[in-house]
Length: 226
Image (cartoon, rainbow, N blue to C red; front, top):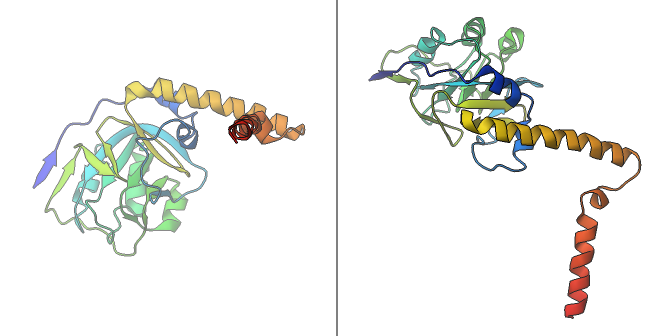
């Protein structure tokens, strides 16, 4: 059975530009939901993308729906692929990556396998996956779903969600959550640069972040209690 829905409205480009200035690992200092499993890793280094989720679910060897999605992707989209537990068949190789990039897709995130690393590097389309496989998916035309709610890396992803990904991992947010999360992270990143300057000047991290002061308080209380 095939399920095909319309594309979601794209996330506001201004919000995505703001989100792209934040690092997922910085947001991970204060947020604990929306992060995909760490096994889903970036296959190309030094990439960060922020875009609109376009979702696909495909089963086993049949990756027909990924090819269907290649005809629908828009500039600024990120293809998020639910493999329904399949860890044998690669859902993305050189041809899929080239076609996705030609459509303006920012990247592909797969809860499963990819292949053709040399071509992925050559075509420079960021791909996140659980690993690599030499066994590729095929267009078997048996079943698949397009623009439906999916699960990817243990995270529920709906078409139109915002996705932020870099070599540290993948984060999924609702558009309404972007401003608060991104601005907080950007502020933390700016403060970190100030901390680095203080460390270069000779200060110690536990003095800067209050660890030493708090431990002194605890030790003092323990001594009084004893």
